[in-house]
Amino acid sequence: MSTTLQHHGYDGSVEYSAEDKMLHGRVVGIRDMISFGGKSVRELEKNFRDAVDEYLEFCKKQGKTPNKPFKGSLSVRLRDGLHTKAAIFAEKNDVKINTVINDALDEYLAKSA
Image (cartoon, rainbow, N blue to C red; front, side, top):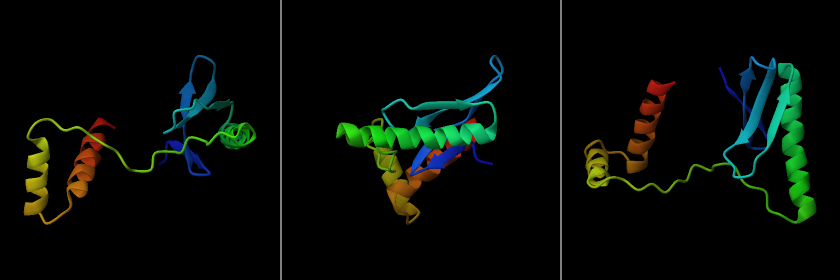
């Protein structure tokens, strides 16, 4: 089951508001704020696609480079010794340190879901 919408490489969140009986969302993974809504799933999906298309068109008209979604590259500062522990673990298990970090994040996020 997916909880996000996708269009032109952009991801949109999906939330339900019981207060106004509406579906809401925003484009995630970029600095600019793009939100959309709808009374049905079909309307929400259409409004998401329209919002992304309008954002891209607006940026083009303004001569602005659109924010790009997260690309999978992240700079992280680790606590003292954690980098060393991760590197040793990776070496002992014959994997790259990126694999160790990705697996650890997957496991951590699966617990919080």
